[in-house]
Length: 201
Image 1: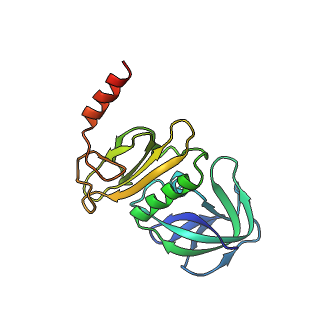
Image 2: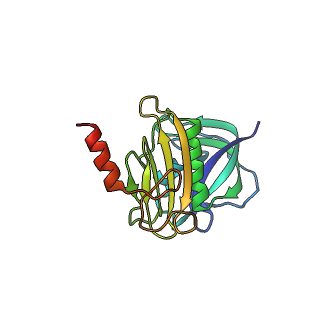
Image 3: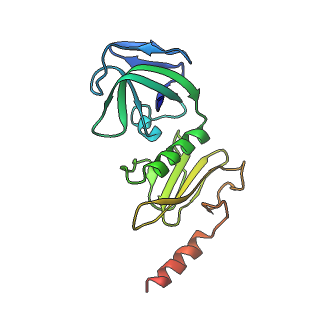
C-alpha cells in the first residue's frame, strides 16, 4: 500500500542531501542505500507543520506531498521520517498546506501538538508564513487579505476534534481584520470574552 508524507524544498526544488544539494524532479523515483533520521536517507514528515522546523519560511520554500517507500526510519522527536525511496506527487498551495495540517490533527488528535498551532484565539502574525491555526474549545482568528486561517474545535476534556474549517481571508466569507469562528461567522471577541468571564463568576 502506498505511503505518503510531506517534504519542503528550496524555491528551486533543491534540498540538502548528504554533503551537498540535490535537484529534485516531480514524479521521478529516486533512491538512497540507507535511511536514518539522524544522518541519511530522504527526510520528510507525516505532519506537514513539522517541515517548518527545517524550512521555516513559506515565502522561500515550497511544500510537496511525497510518496515514500523502501526502508523507513521514524524519528523519536516529531513526525519526521527518513526513507530510501521517494517521489514528488503534488505541490501544495498555502491553503492546501494548512488543510493537510488540520487533517493530520483530526486523524491523530492525541499526537503532540506542533508549536505552530495556537491554543487560544489568535491573529496571523507579521511573519513570512501568512497563516494561523487555532485549536481549542471556541477557536476564532483574524488575518489580512490573502492570509490563511485554520480553525479546529476541540473537546477540551478528551482532545477529540469535532469541527474544523480552513479559510483564505478576503476570498471566502472571512473579512480582513475581523474575528471569525469555525463556521465562517463574524464574531465579537470582546463580547464573547465578557460572557465567558461572567459565566465563571
